[in-house]
Structure formats: C-alpha cells, structure tokens
Length: 67
Image (cartoon, rainbow, N blue to C red; front, side, top):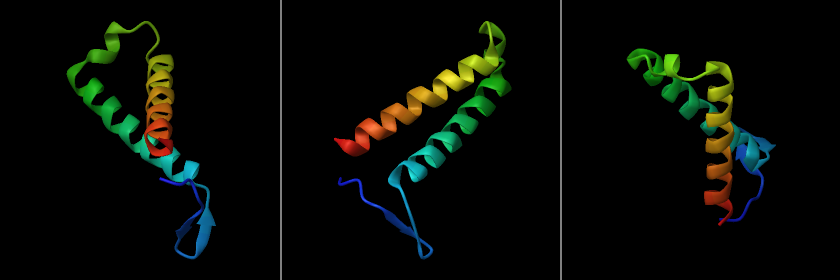
C-alpha cells in the first residue's frame, strides 16, 4: 500500500490520521474488555499500560500498512 493522502468527505488527511483513529478504537475496545474481566488490577500502573498498548497497536498498524 502506498501511503498517500486520503480523501475523507472532501478533505485530504494524512494516512497516519486514519491509523491513529483505528488504533484508538481498538485500544478502547481492549480496555473495556480488560475492565470487564478485571485484568487491569494486575498491572502496576493501568494508565501507563493502556498507553503502552496503544503505542504497540499504532506501531503494528503502521508497519503492516507500510509493508
């Protein structure tokens, strides 16, 4: 896939904007699942853990799209 601007309702946006949104939605979904099952109480700092998950997801999406 070539990383070119995406036409979103007549506005050209950078492809990283779309990737950031997708990673954020996936992170919110994973956080809700972790909250529902009580998994976040096992980590030292839940906010830092969620931030790390977001960065890992975003990096994975960028690497998959740029390959």
